[in-house]
Image (cartoon, rainbow, N blue to C red):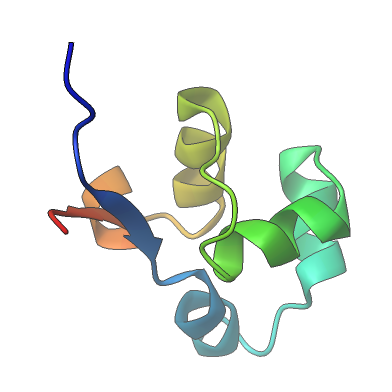
Length: 73
């Protein structure tokens, strides 16, 4: 089976700013993950589980595809 090229990008940093400057720690607490995990997701160094991705979208009251995008490489 071949390796599929792609990358999940996100708008978390922008969305945190739009809701009044939410910190990474505040988002982490709302979702139930660590601040370091939020940082890694924002930096596109880590792709969250589907459950975590939905929780992040829920915090921002946005559909999943407005928070995360899959881009072909």
